[in-house]
Image (tube, rainbow, N blue to C red; front, side):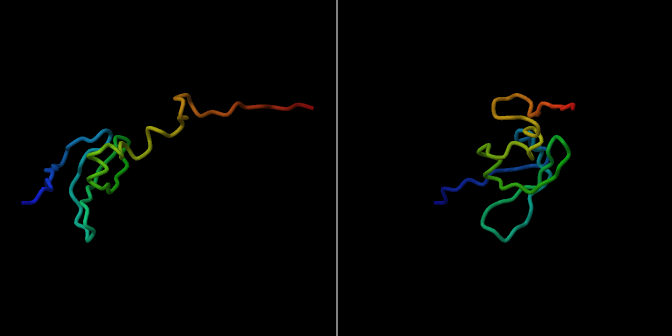
Length: 81
């Protein structure tokens, strides 16, 4: 008996910010899904990363943010002589 479950992934399924486009044919032993992020970036993501939540977006949600949640800005310091 095969204990592995084949997950049914269909176009337009949502995983966090990713939207499924199609499954990609690969020679590797894992399944790869072509997805589009909410920002428009398209990438191939391993199915397991989508299912367990390791891949939530292309990184667009994290750009400009620090770990404490505040904006990543550096104060501008001007010097006059």
